Every structure is written in structure tokens, then in C-alpha cells.
Image (cartoon, rainbow, N blue to C red; front, side):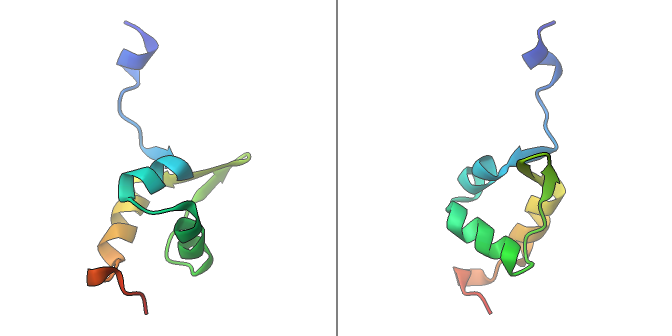
Length: 68
């Protein structure tokens, strides 16, 4: 069994992957972090977003994308 077969499920994503998955740019992601609406984890120099945090953040995004 190869490494890719053993570790197919991930519980977190890089900021770049998070942006791609949610159709937003890095500037928007960093703004969400600065405003306290998105809570990343830092591991060394990497900024990671957990699946749970992604779901929580997405559920809190206002309909129509208008922020308050």
C-alpha cells in the first residue's frame, strides 16, 4: 500500500487550498483572518485551515456575500 493510498483523507488544508476550495482569493482569506472570522492554525511557517473551521466559516458567511 503506497503513501497516497494510506493518507487520502486530510483534516486540514493550506491557505492556498482553502482559497481554491471556497472560490476566494488570498487577500480575502487574510482579511477574514484579520477580522477574526476565520481561525487558522500555524504550524511552523504554514497556515492551515481545518475542515471543521472551513465548515464553521462557510456557514457564517452572509447570504449574498455581504459582510457586516
